[in-house]
Image 1 (tube, rainbow, N blue to C red):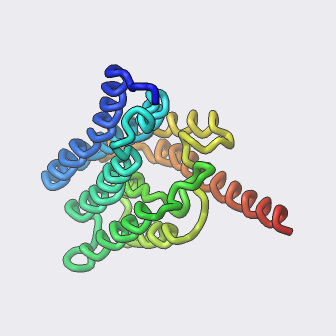
Image 2: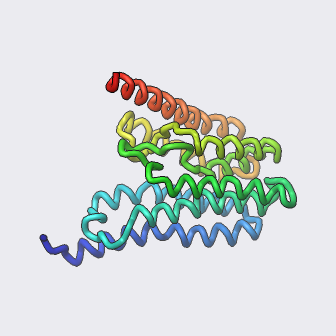
Image 3: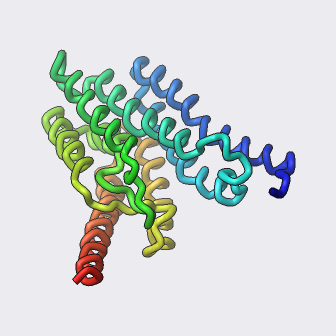
Amino acid sequence: MTPVSTSARVAAASVHAYTALGVVLALLMVHYAYAGEVRTVLWLFLVAMVIDGSDGFLARHFRVKEVMPEIDGALLDNIVDYITYAFVPMLLLWANGYLPAGTAGAVCAAVPALASCYQFTRTDAKTDDHFFLGFPSYWNIVAFYVIVADLSTTVTVALLLVCTILVFVPVKYVYPSRTATWWTANMLLAALWLVLYAVLTWQSPDASTLLIGLSLVYVAYYLAVSLWLTVRTRQRQRLSTS
């Protein structure tokens, strides 16, 4: 076995540390959520998404799995993503009055968090052909739209229920940084959406309805492409077995 250089191990460790920064962001999110500083939490969501969208590239570039096999980077990524994409968004909505009062609000926050436990522990949650199977627990994005669009409690609860159900529906959702089909378009549109996210967060609590609608075009595109690729994959599988 070829010995691993010190510089390679330092680079690999740095990538893991970069991913682990998400936990620090999560602590800040919790603090500011309870302080009622909702817009600050939205900014922290953005930073977390940028880290999550870039650490995989870095891990592959620096051959982290090969250089530092004793650290499970995928497990680290799942831990951070669960906290920042599922747990904190539900806490944010619950702590700041976007969910029903009392026990009903606690239930509304708990159900998506529990569904995400299932999502993040599935061995096939990320498929071999680089898709997410079932709604990929983008609760931070759901919370973002609830806040910037100032959705009513009734609409918010309905949205959480629909997305929770979709966790268990085996649709293959695009993994923007890994899905090969239309990779360039997917990455470009995702980057443009992040820019719109930043603008809408900056405008909050008086976000432009036009820009909200424009940002939802990407969400509609993402869902449409995911459904289309799911159907196409199943058709090909049927043809190959017939």
